[in-house]
Image (tube, rainbow, N blue to C red; front, side, top):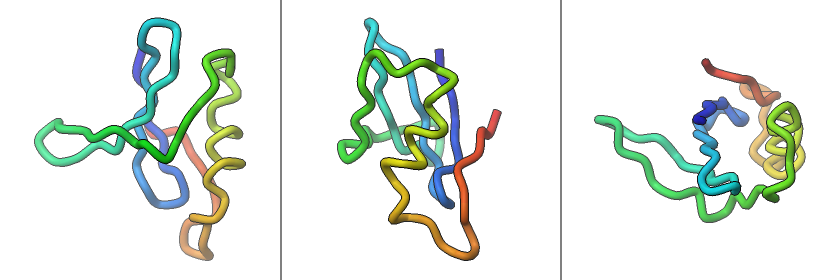
Length: 72
């Protein structure tokens, strides 16, 4: 399972791997790098991911990018 978000203007891909959530920054040509600064507890429900990312990364917010939204 892979979910893409626009987190205050930055793309973040969240993937469920072996019962844990992993966050990545997608790049060009399908490459992605681990988002070491985003740690999501394993018990976070899928429906709560958007709000969790908003709470965790709120300092990224700006007038141009005021929220977190689902991309897919």
